[in-house]
Image 1: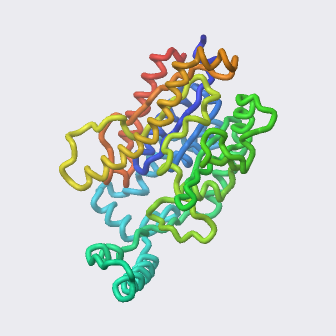
Image 2: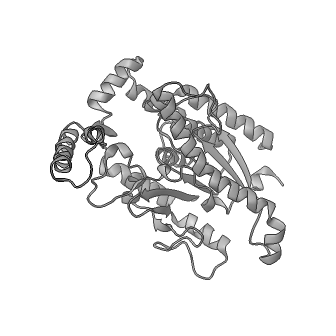
Image 3: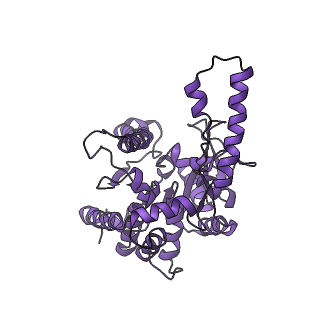
Length: 362
């Protein structure tokens, strides 16, 4: 089969400063003319996919490499990482996030009141080390996105001619929301073969009982970009960035025959095992993201193995899916998460082009 006739999907995993990896893949896809039928995205890839859709349609004045270069310049205008880190700590990045100076003090006062109550009148045994640590707030940043930022992304996704999927997660309810544009819902409905659209807003997944489907709007985009660092006192929503729960969305892309899994981490630890705190925190992040990814990946590989039996029972319902992992090729984590890298972009671009060559894309 001609590669251009194979229905391909992009699964874009977001992760802080490693988002340049996904941007490099998307730039290569544009340059090679590889068009997806569906795209899933988490965390920072929500922004890059919206940029990709605009660049793909010629609606952007800059290409993706130029956009990344501008992001790097704004985050590190002097080229000195120590100065850039100090500046970000004190002032944040205007229009993106700000330090939670006022909120941090307010949260610490509230925490101190709770600690005093625990120590003085609480029924539980007092562990001073725990009470001391409970003084310090979990929120250290506040989002500084203007409302039109979320609205613009939502509009781009709603109008897209390809299916768009992203997610958020409510830790208190233990529920994942998966957001679909009209094209994604149409493709999934056609694939399901059901008379009733199982993917209508508010419907629960028929095989993941803690996942429900919803429309894409500005609030959905806001929830999908809500970091742990922003704290948990949202008045209208208890949702956080869906990448913390499911960093790569594969199941909803099963309409495709090939899924490019664009991963901002590698499936293996690429250095000596940790001996210091930053490396340990990075290892925790990578293991967590790899664990959630493997669950869906192995599910697809299992169906591939069982195709004969499954199609004997339900003819034509299942098809083989070719998974192509495009992973970040160098160690890049923890403090590196703070800053995007043009080298990461370039490496991803090169790796993607090589992958397209190996698969026979013209």
